[in-house]
Image 1 (cartoon, rainbow, N blue to C red):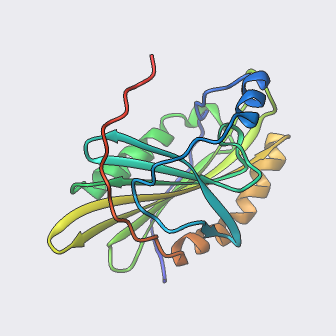
Image 2: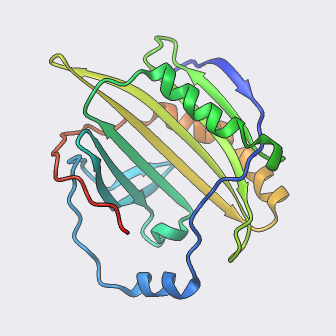
Length: 215
């Protein structure tokens, strides 16, 4: 698929994440596995960039939004190296608005992260758009890291039923931020090509009760 670059916005920002203590991570790592409800009924494991990803989280965020996350076998969700996130919206969503919000979210932080950038790439038929971006983070606990993300936005129209999927991939490198950001930037073209050529898995949506937010 030949991509048409429609926007390149270099920006810097600090990506906000929740930081968990090492003690909490250890407890989670040894906790008994919890059976997950595959709300999207996606055959697994998923394969991306020659790595296998297993279902690690499944949530019903709203009546029309289900989210699932996948990590590699030896990873933990709160401290992953690579992650796939699939957000399925059981309704029609305006793609241009979604793209604009994503770019603005990244762009407004540009004064705080000199290594970050964001790009938007559109497919020739205009049916898919990828937003990819790099950020760095220096948490209060743990090592600093750079994170490369790409979000692939796609409309679906099956038998007149409109829906929307965001297929996302994230990769982190810990350590010196300059080195980590440079290393991930060198991988960008390969990862972007992989994202473009990867088939978004078929979804059979099984809505469940919306999960209550933890207090």
